[in-house]
Length: 467
Figure 1 (cartoon, rainbow, N blue to C red):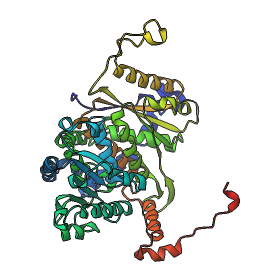
Figure 2 (figure 1 turned 90 degrees about the vertical axis):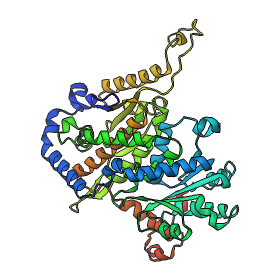
Figure 3 (figure 1 turned 120 degrees about the vertical axis):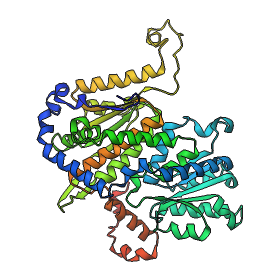
Figure 4 (figure 1 turned 60 degrees about the vertical axis):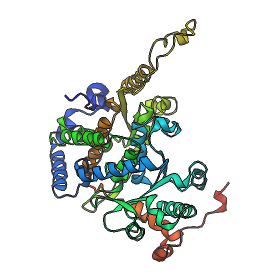
């Protein structure tokens, strides 16, 4: 076993631990024909080049281009601002939090040794205005990320930053401050990049936004901040070897997907709580929420049947949410699967001092480390849930590093793709999201969507229902 291999422990999903609430091996074996077909489908998609995210760990050329650009940005700028939303932001946020100092932006420059990172992913006017109080636009590089180039929130931010830049410099200097990440050929940003000579990176044609975390969408901002993207991609490639085994009992991604599928379809547990026990891993749950919500929440199956599939993702953080959510998980409806994520080793640790030892409520902590306390709380929650016949599984990282995070991201992506096959849905489109975007364009007065405005059925609110 490789030293830094992450593991998936699903003992607490099984009937040996949970009794009647658990899954037995017979249920898994009964699904073997469906599992084999799902595995064949994924392999065919991979062979046909349709499963684009599986090739990202092996794209050496783009990796080297990113590293070269990132080095130039580090040498020149104090701030790096990402303008993106959803898959163009959440992966960057998650991996930056996991792989850099917990107070990265507050570090003095000589310790940070890279630009501060800001990600604007929500058009809140107060937040948008506030950033200009803390950055010098002349010392800032902007990375605009949108595959279509038509994302309203990102377009609005780009227009605002473009104007701010033009207030401080001539137009011919803009190409030194703006980098575009978008579709290889098409999209609204391509002609802008060409017109102004802007540096650009491509999101591959066969990679959707929520699966693009190992593309330039996140790799460029991460590399700018000093993250070792070589090791990140090596970790993903290593996990690719682990999840390429067609035997479900040897494939952690397939097994996790099968257990979630059985839990949702047979045991009616269609809520998935991701609960990392590490501040560094907190935003992995946010990234994963988009991955599952957009990939698995579908009205139609691939053969056109209305199925309204989906497993609702919920974010939690241990140990904080032991004091806010775990009561529900312990004694509420039997409709959830908890996925713990923990680290055996932390980058830093602190020993709890041997003071206040005259208090029994404090003395037991003396001499122990915070890592021991945090992981003991995870173990205690896991045991208590199991004793209450509540389903859970645990993903363990030997340490939080680029290599293990590459494994984790890739594991969760393949698990999602496999779940899509089990549900027989298209896990790579998002018609519900597109419908919402079209309605927003219409309401904002976009000419190309004026006909949609007429189609929107908005019933007038009743005053009686407003208190």
